[in-house]
Length: 379
Image 1: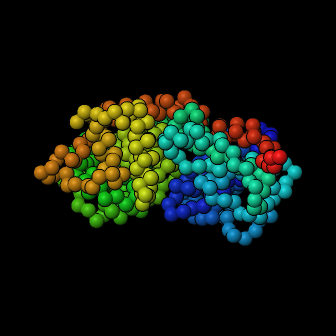
Image 2: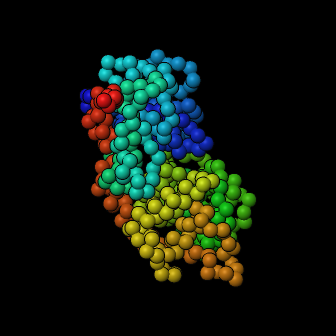
Image 3: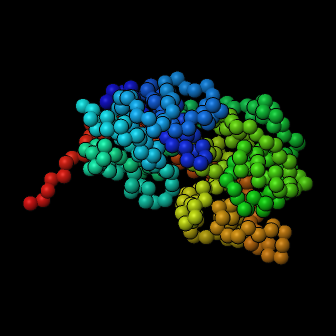
């Protein structure tokens, strides 16, 4: 494989924009590293606001059920097991030099990810018979594929003019006011959190979708005001997170960007009926708390408060009114200084690990021309 490889990235938009958000960041980052990228997406509408300027070196195609005659590139990435079109896979298998086929998996801090990263999956049937597919897991340890992080990210953040950017977006803060970003799914704990925000003057920046819809139906505390944001490009969303005093984010891409922002954060995972999101939530929180979450923390400590608030935010206990007889069940705010220090300590650890694009490029180069070997019957 040459240093400038041709990449095909396939993405299906399910019910939110996290899928295409991750895939676009990956495509743009690979192209910035002199790779040639085609992004195939079944719904490209979000890119009009998510990446209005596009990116040099990235071609975008609408992925439909109609057969395509495109010749597969050197590397084919299917995001989150979305399965490329069968005719495309057939051409992958028929090529003289088959591409490296990678399934870019979901992000998780669970321990099994370390063991599963980089495992092969020989394709013995279907249009891709004879090919090898590889599982590639983003993650938070050196045994995983790392996180998306473009070159110069922290330098750009250090040079960022918070006041000017906020004013340009109509987000002028009043004296003593903190900025809180709310990007969430539907959340029954939101009423409780709004009451907690009433402890000091707060400007609540509401992203489009569930955040705005839910807050508009609730009564804000006296010292909290809100403002509706439009859909933001990924660049401006980063700027928003850099500007905030507290980031309430959802999904995978926004968690990673909130980590790089280095501000206190709460992460809401996509709720699943079987409670699998709570296992992922606990695994990440343990990483954030330095591997000490299972040891427990003293009542009223900043880490204990964060655990209780985190679990409430992810539906692990029934929300209770903040003002009530059983106030012991209502979490208090973690100390901002300790909360910030925990996020920045985790960020520093992650910055020492290779980023996801670098690892993908290295992985693809080392696995070029690898085919699944035919099974030899035992005698």
